[in-house]
Length: 171
Image (cartoon, rainbow, N blue to C red; front, side, top):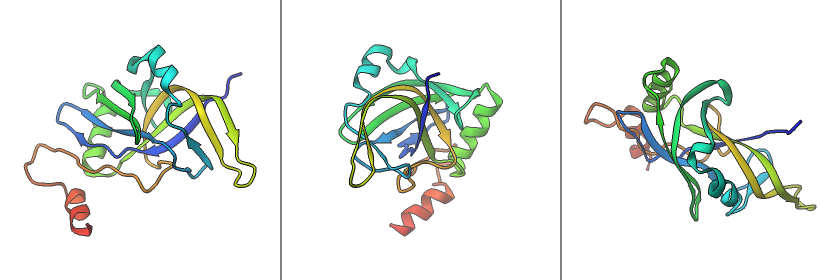
């Protein structure tokens, strides 16, 4: 049986729009996560060329019974795995997740993938993943890279959300 690896990576989403569209990063390259693994730039290159954005599912908390939308773009850039997607607002769980993203109750993304190639640094014990097959990206409560978070959430109000205002004040 093939083992699916799940990486909890926070989203750094750029915005969440009224229609459920949002964007962010599902993975950050070169950063050791809480599971002592690090993804290398280009790790998803072959998979993305073969499957495109439609080849990976959008789930809630990695639950295959909770699809909440679809990915419209998945690409690697210098920072990490940049994603754009649409949460289905016609599905109850989609509406709930969208509401929680807007309020700041949720702000993480997590990837589920199969490792194709990896090495382990014998000194540090860190596993360096150089090639992976992306299966799904989930909106999650606890991302594996806690320092990366949602930066901006758009709402129907022209006023900033409480969470956005708090972040601005802290900066």
